[in-house]
Length: 531
Image 1 (cartoon, rainbow, N blue to C red):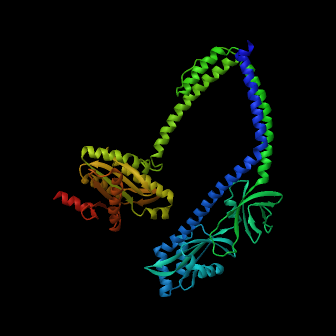
Image 2 (image 1 turned 180 degrees about the horizontal axis):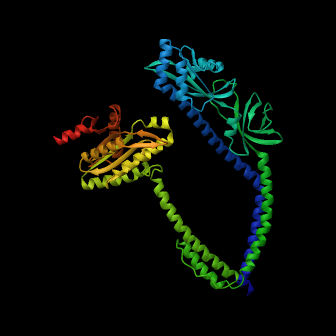
Image 3 (image 1 turned 90 degrees about the vertical axis):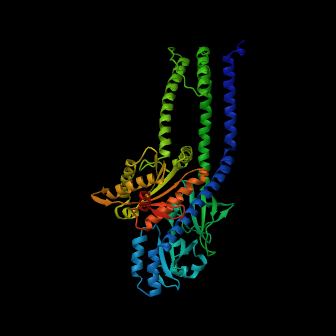
C-alpha cells in the first residue's frame, strides 16, 4: 500500500531526480571543455564580425571627415586662390583650423594637384605617400605604414567649379591607445605584427616578441591564444597585420573552476531535493489543491486574491508566501502598465520639446487621410525651419540651441488648434499637419507663428537671441491618392517651398503651387484671395 501513496512517489521521484541530475552534471563535466571551446570559437567568429563592422564604421567616418573638408565651399575658394592665383597658403591653414580643428584625427595634409604641400608640410612621409598614391586611392580609405606606425588614411579630391585643385588626406593612428579602445573584454586581445614580430598589442611586455602560430594558436607569456586575422585594406604588401585573439588558457582555467563549483552544487542540490521531498509529506492535500487552482488561474493570465492561511506548517507558509507573491505581482503588473504607458508615450514624442516624432507621424497620418476623405477637406503640412540655427549652436553652444528649440516649441503650441498636429522632424525642423477647408487657414497659422517668432527674444546666460522662422506649405485634397504616397508628396512639396523661402531671404512663408511646381509667397496668395 505504501508503494501507491504520494509519499512513496515523492521519495521515488526525488531519488530519480537526484540520480538524473548527478548523471547529467557528471556527463556535462566530462564534455564541457570541448563544447565550451567550440562555442567560444563560434562566439569569436561573431565577435570578429562585429569588430570588422566597427572597423568599417571607423573607415567610413574618416572618409566622411575628409569629404566634409573637401566639399566645404570656403576651403575650395581659398584653395583656388592659393593654387590658381598664387596667394599665400597661411590663410588657408587658419581657415582649416577654424573650421575643422575639432575633427578627431591625428594628422592632416592638403596638397595641390601638382604636388605642392599647402597644409601639413612637417608630415613629409605622409605627403610623399599622398603624392605617390593620390590618384590610385582617391576617394578610398587605406591602412599605411608611416613614421607614426600603422595609420588609417582617407584621401578626397578638392574640386572647385569642375577644376581639380588638389587633395586632402586625414589620418588616424593605429597605436596602443587605439588597440586598448577596441579591446572587447578581459579575455580578448589585439596584436599588430610584421614579419613575424609583435609591434604592439593589448598585452603587456609583448613588444618585439615572436609571433608564431601553430594551428591558428599563439603561445606567449605561458598563455595560449586562439587567433583570427583581421583583413585591412592596404596598398603595400608588407604592411603590418592585425590579429584578434582570445586566451584559451584563461577559458580552460575558468572552465575547471566552474566544474568544481558544479560538483559542489550537485551534492547541495541532492540534499536540498531530498529534504524538500520529506518536508512536503504532511498535510498538503487541501492546500496543494487550492494552490493548483490558483496557479491554473495565474497561468491563464489572471491574478486572483488569495486569503492567507492561519496554519503555521510548511504548506501554510508556502500558501501565505504565494498570497504575498500574488499581491506583489498585482502591484508589479500595475506598475508595468504605468511604465508601459509612459514608454509608449516616450516612443512617439521628442524628449526635448515634448512634440510628436517621425514614428508617430507614420502611425497617425493614415488616420488623418481617412478623416480628410470623409469630410472632403484638404490635408495640409507646414514645414517650419528656424533661420540661422546652426550659427546659434556655433556661437553660444548646443545648450543655447536647446533653449531656442524649447522656446520655439512653446510658440508653436500656443498657436496650435484642435485639428492641428505638431511634430519635430529633427534638428531645428518642425512639422504641422492640419485638416481644413482651404489652404488660407494654414497660411494664417504659419504667418502667426512667423510673426510671434520674429517678436520673441530668447535669453540664455544673459545673452538675448532674436529668432526668425521660414515656412513651406503644401496642401492636397486626398481624393483617390494612395495614402502611402501622399505623405512623401506633401513633404517634398513643402520642403521645396521652404527651400525657396530660405533662398529669398528667410523669415517668410511660401506655398507650393501645383501649376508651376514652385513655391509662391503667401503674401501674394492672400492678396489674390482678398481681390
